[in-house]
Length: 144
Image (cartoon, rainbow, N blue to C red; front, side, top):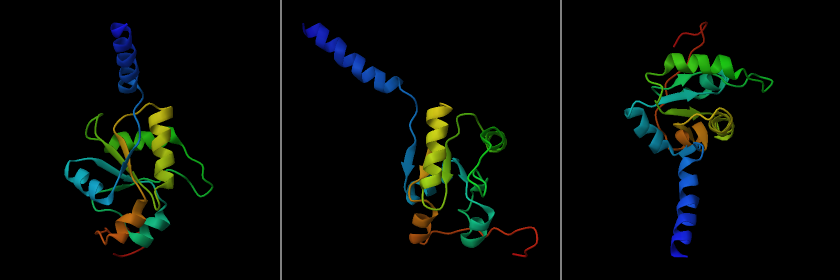
């Protein structure tokens, strides 16, 4: 009987270990630390948002959703792969509030079964609230 209970417990815990990757919520401090660890930080907001607040220094602006809320995941992932330094590099997603980055992160982990995916919980709003530095984003017609 003891062996039976031990096997049941082992099965329960091993299925958790073998389950699909999950999206990781990060704080602004976590993102700052992960930038130093060479994580790939991708700002999925719109160009207007990048210009309004700037972006996290070292991050890459790569819009996911268009103005109508549509997306082309295949094209977006092609651009991400160009930015990655290795296939296992951690990818951290950033948006304004954490809502869009959460949706994209769940899509990547649940639908595409990608691992090493995280997002800035509460988005750029939390980054700016902590008065962390930003990098100005200029359009081709602007001078910075």
